Length: 456
Image 1: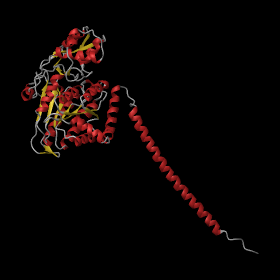
Image 2 (image 1 turned 60 degrees about the vertical axis):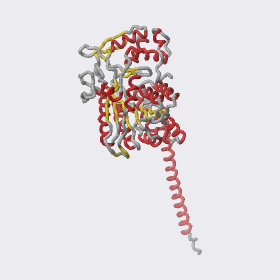
Image 3 (image 1 turned 180 degrees about the vertical axis):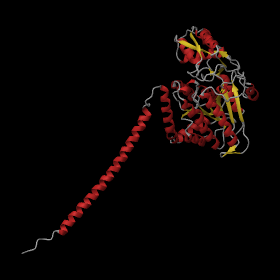
Image 4 (image 1 turned 90 degrees about the horizontal axis):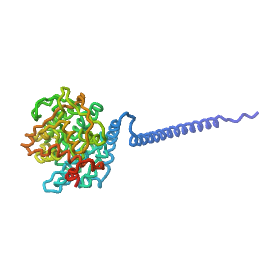
């Protein structure tokens, strides 16, 4: 009887082939899974980026949206500008190149702000090179900032849209332009808003200033720095008029505390790294193109709209008064400080010799009560205000400011020349024209020429 055929070899071969197929199938599945994971991750990142750029976070107030914009701008600015190439660098150089012999090359932070716009135009007009930097945050109406930007562009001043916390971008700007000076005006402004959003003050006024100082100390050559402190640093000081040698260790608001911190940081970077730094304590600046969160601005708006305005008095019944300082006088003070700023003495982040460190008041030297301010506006607008006198809330505002400017006068000839009535008349003319309001205003306003800094 014949033996059955030997099938063991065939069986083993089939098992082996089956094993190979399973192994290959497993490898293919693993490779497909990795590819699917990577594609999914990439799509998720793209969707998150699109959502971040186009939609605000869920929040209860408009000003929470400011942080979204602030963060997104900081995240993207290096990529947007760092990769812009030769054309953008050419724009930066052109804007920052002086047109007069021995002219300055000035980086102006907060250039689309109130003081920043006026100072940038004044510097450009006299032949200095000016490059602006502004993050266009939404603390107040951004359309006003964009309108200022258009005026700057008309005068060939480029405003780079970025944040002072972006160290990479700032370093790139210093690589492109050897700035001789920085006029640092970027800040989170306002006393009352600090109670709603304290972190914004720390981000801008403390962290942002440190970031700028870090970049400046490493620059070669190091620039001279003029920056905006505030009269708010005098806080609960009761000595009048306020002088630079008065105590400033009792701030009444977080805003004041961050500005005082800035003065201390300026001292540190001057002492360690040889940066030439001048701080300017502004006293209630007002005028055309001003900030809508300031009393004279929203009083004008509310009076014209027939709304009731709140006039504060101190808790002991005294009138609240401010040393209102017209924008043209502030500009003259800023330029005077720049003109007399000595060169920094550091190199490569190392101090070579003692450097200049200064602090000055820039005010008008004549406090005016808020009630008097309203009375002047009533006369200019031809409208009687609906007034509600209330006690001053405990929000960090102080009842009285008065500047002693003798030190600024001695060192660079600072002398304010515009009284409140004259300054408000110029502001009201600008306000009516900018917002297209038909006149209930006295004819005398129509005869006043526009502000020379911004209406050329």
